Structure formats: C-alpha cells, structure tokens
Length: 179
Image (cartoon, rainbow, N blue to C red; front, side):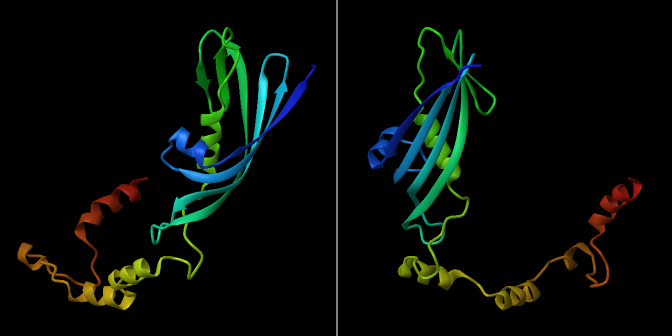
C-alpha cells in the first residue's frame, strides 16, 4: 500500500471566525496543522489545532480567552454524490475532486471548548459579580426558607409526619420491589 502525505499549516484569526459565522466562536487565534495522507482508496486528513478563542465567561458574561487544543481525523473517499457517513467519513463527488475543510476545522475548534468556561478567580467583571452576589442565597437562607415555607397540604386532609414517606412514592416502590 503506497502512501503519500502533504502537510499544510494555517493560522486562523478573527477574520476566519467572522467569515465562517458560527454560533460558538466569533474571535480567536488558532494554529492548524493538516496532514493529508493519500491511501489506496481514500485520503486521511489529520488535523491538529492549538490556540485560543474568545468566549463569554459563564459567570460574568465578559469575553475571556479560552485555550483550545484538539487532534481530529477525517477519512475522505470519492463517490457519486456528497455524503457524511459516520463521525469521520466524508464522501465527495469524483468530478469535483476537492473538499472545503473550513467548516470541519471550525467544528473541531468549537468541540474543543470546555463546557464550563469562567475567568480565573478574581478576574471576573467586578460590577457583575457584585450584582450576582446580591442575588445568591447562602445555604442557611435556603434552609430557613424551606422550614418557614407554607405547604398547604393540610387543606387536602393530609397530615405531615417527619417519619412517614410521601404516599405517591409507595406505588413506585412496589414496582421496584417486583423487579
């Protein structure tokens, strides 16, 4: 099996993210290395991305620099019409003979962003964190509210007893006991 490979390097900046117009990332600077290996019946595209993107902080909503890094592969084969089969197999029409990888690179970068992204401690917008702190209740406040909250169960004729369970759960427990 004969294999040839080519190496490409790209630097993606704010202009790339503006043109791709994806929902997750609008700004950043990411270095991409793409190695294309020609195999007997397909091309293997190996992507390595390394850099940072600007995303809103989950806590204060100010933009923050989020490091991203990923290594991903695509397998590209020729066929009659364009199709995406599975997570990493792309079929392109033989008469076209080319593939635009810009959206795939964008998706690899977007998927590399952690679910939670917050500024390091003390770096969030002070005005926003001050407003948030006014609305955050302490655990003792929540416990106090639970114990002082009026539950109108007495109107339905039920008496609350700390030792008893909610009768609605009894039928569900019967189902579990039968299994």
